[in-house]
Length: 249
View 1 (cartoon, rainbow, N blue to C red):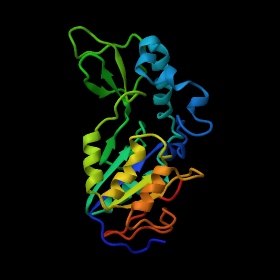
View 2 (cartoon, rainbow, N blue to C red; view 1 turned 60 degrees about the vertical axis):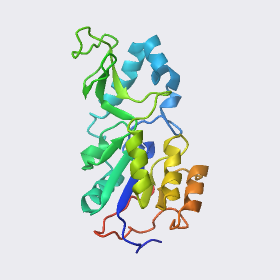
View 3 (cartoon, helix red, strand yellow; view 1 turned 120 degrees about the vertical axis):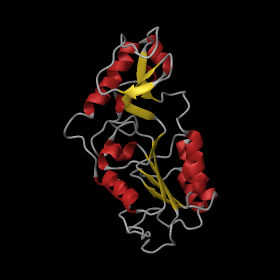
View 4 (cartoon, rainbow, N blue to C red; view 1 turned 180 degrees about the vertical axis):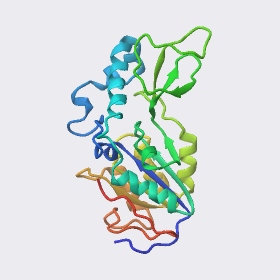
């Protein structure tokens, strides 16, 4: 149990689909996830968009509409992380693999979106990005180019490189506490973040609902000089300004 630990200077939190699932968001991973309804290659790749842009747009339109459902709102883990950001006196960054806006709604601001943002659109010609809360279709076109180009959701599709990786590796190399919340640790590069942080001397804490901890997290905890035996804090970590840490979800 962690009740007192050395003062942290820099905290990095990684969140995955599990934290959104607790709010009722349908996700690509886990039993009952969207993979049961759609083959991912049919809705989340550049080739799928080229082959059937209407299907891809409809898929993401459904995801976007779901965020407008009043029942979909930040849960206790989102709120705890936003509270931690406000109260922590050092450097804090939240890396999320999710494309919803629940972290922002909870009050988090220091967010690195490695997989993009479902509430934004991107021009296939210029690459410009802008807010988009409405539906898109195969006929949607940009307004930023003389020759209007098709518009896609501003999300990272399978086969594409995640966003902001240079910034992510920098903050992972500088942090002294790394916390993973609601992520299975099955997909790289995110699966390797805990190991990278541990290799640089950070304490590692894992909060996930997965029944079996994945090998990358096991290796990270084995390497972490101050990793708690259970890898999950049983009580809030006492920082410079005490703040609740996320519990397993």
